[in-house]
Structure formats: C-alpha cells, structure tokens
Amino acid sequence: MGIVIETAVWEPSSSVFIFILISCFLSLSLFPFYFSKHAPTKSPPFSDHPPSSSPSLRFQLYFLLIYSLASVLEGLWSVYGEFELVYHGISKEDTVTFLLIGFGAALFVGSFLGPVSDLIFETWAVIEHDKMGHRQEILNETFWLMIFFQSASLIGSQVIGNWMVGGNLEKEIGSPSVAAALLAMVGIICMSRDHDGTPKTMMFKDYRASFYAYILGDRRIWLLACAQTCLHFSIVVFWILWAPTLVADGREVYLGLIYPCMLGARMLGSTVFPWLIDASFRTEDCLMYAFVTEALLLSIIAYDYQDIGVLVTQFSLFHACIGLILPSLARLRTMYVPNELRGGMISLSLAPANAAILFLLMQRGYYRTIENSTMIAFAAVGLFIAAGCMYVLKRCGKQPYQNGRKL
Image 1 (cartoon, rainbow, N blue to C red):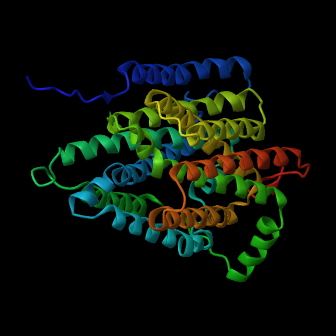
Image 2 (spheres, rainbow, N blue to C red):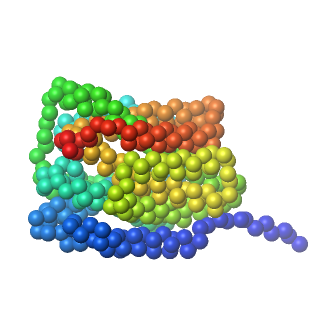
Image 3 (cartoon, helix red, strand yellow):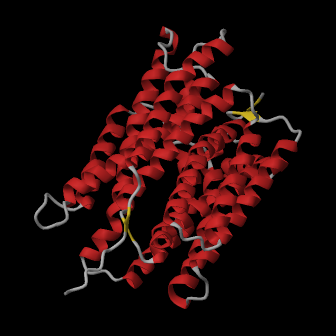
C-alpha cells in the first residue's frame, strides 16, 4: 500500500479579514460623533464642509485619486515583480543585482531629486491647502487618508495582477508591467491637464542658503530626519525578508492571503491617527510609543521565532503601527519644515537608509556574511533609535514652524 504524505498548508482565517474590515468601518463611522461631541466649535470630518472650503475638499479628493493611482502602480510591481522576473528566466542572483542597482540609483540619483522638485514644484498637497486658506485639521485628514487609500490601492493592485496573470502570462491579457505602463500614462495625462498651479522657481544659491539655515542648522529637523531614516530602513528590510521568514520552517504558505491582511492592518492603523490627534496627545509621544512597539516586534522576529500564526500577527501589528506613524511624521514635517525645503529634507533622510540597505544587500546577497535575522535586528535597533529621537524632539523647547512660518 502506498504512503500518502500530506503537505501542511497554512493560511489565515477569514475571520481575520472580517475583523479588520469591521474595525475600520467602526473607526471611520464613530469618529465624527466623538469629534463633534468633544470639539463643538469645529466642523467634524467626513461631513459637508462649508462653501468656503469646497475648493479645498475638491482638491483633496482629486489629490487622493492621483495618489491612489500611483499606489496601484507601486503595488503591481511589489506583488508580481519578482514573479514576472522568474517567468522571464531571471535567477535569484540576478534579482539581487537588480535590487542593488535600484538602491544604488536611489542613493546616487534619487538623493538629488528632492532639491530639484523643491526648486521647480515644491510640495503639491501642502502648498495647495495653504493657498486655499490653511486649515490644519483638513491637512491632517489628508495625511491619514493618503495612507488609508494607499493601502486599499495596494490591495486593489493585487486583484488586478491576479486577473491579468491568471497563472499563465501567455494565455492572459498581459503582464502587470503592461498595466503599470498604461496607468502611468493615465496619471501623467491627468496631472498635465488638471494641475493648474504655477511652478515657483528659486535660485540654487538662495535654495542652498535656506537649506543650510533651516534644515542643516536646526537640530529638530535632524532628529526628524533620523527617525524617518530608521523607519524607511526598517520598512524596506521587512518587505525584502517577510516572505523568506514565513517559509523558513518548510510549510507551504499562501502569501497572497497574508499580503492583504498586513495592508488591512495598515489601513486600520491610519484610522487611529485622527483619534489620537483629537485626544490632544503630542505627536512625538504617539510616535515614540509606536516606534518602540515596532522595535519590540522586530526583535522577537529577529530571535528566529518561526510559528507562522504568531509571525503573521506580528507582521500585522507592525503595519498597523506604520499606518499611524506615516501621517504623524507628515504632520511633524508640516510643523517644522518650510514648504520650499520639504523634498530636500525627505531626500536627506532617505539617503543614509538607502546606503545601509545597499551595503547589507551586498553582504547578504554576494558574500553571505550576515543572516536574515541580523538584518531584522539592525532594523529593530534603528526603530529604538527613532523612538529616542522622538523623545529628544519632544524636549526641544524651540518654537516650531508651520508651513515655513513661526507659530
């Protein structure tokens, strides 16, 4: 009699998705009542804005539409990029080479794109809100809605990729890269037709002087940039290693079901942001606790814990914290960084993270001198450093800037 060997397959329960969906719905539906009860003098979010603010609302919706479209483009590659490379005969070693080229370009070329964008376009969303009469609550709402819509768009990109690939690139409509190219063309057309803002230029000499004065000469912005560096590094390390970490014990895992679970947790985390802001918590305090939570989660993962259920729970909590952290950092950038220097400050913070990732990929991909758990441990240490930066930033007594103006 033959022996039948059953393959253990792990997949998340459908109740997890239902819980995340219901939690997001409750958070979005209950917050306006809480807001109106505790802040009666302000107009609650998600309600009809007065006619004077309708241009701001229209721009917010349009901006979120464009941002969601860009997120779909990002998701098509992040979900099916490696699959498409393997289909075309690209080996794992070649994939590592492509990653090195990408992060090398991000380090040596992308670091200069922030100042260039400042010199030509500034920061679109913040500038437009400022033109229409600055209202901090609307800008905060835009920040967390960006993360919410981005996560939903990434899940939608997985659906588009599944439909186009269908298990066989030759029999279906085409590869996800074709859809990405078409969506990119649509986005460019929408931007060129509807963006009627007048570009503001600045001489490079004046920009350099302002950058040294407001960015390099301000300790608060250095602390904020360091926190952003550590966060970017940890996110990239996570997305590189999350799949190998899950399959380390040899069991088969449906990664396509875990991916939307993590992004749903990020959506849920983003809905927590307005609750904490309205509760008068300092943004630095929220970020400090969120960074510590993320660092502890990665520390457990770096300890080589291999139970898939526990790992997925930790991954989801990690992304829930990201959903809270990203809009909170955007709010701090609005408080401390002048608009015309915003892109340069972001590029400054991403450059060290890209350099560290490039170094670790070379050591891991070619020389095999470090393990995956070591890379995750470095990410955890970085998040603890980010928490320390938020603690020091809170203690800084200088008066912050609001869109380049002192409060």
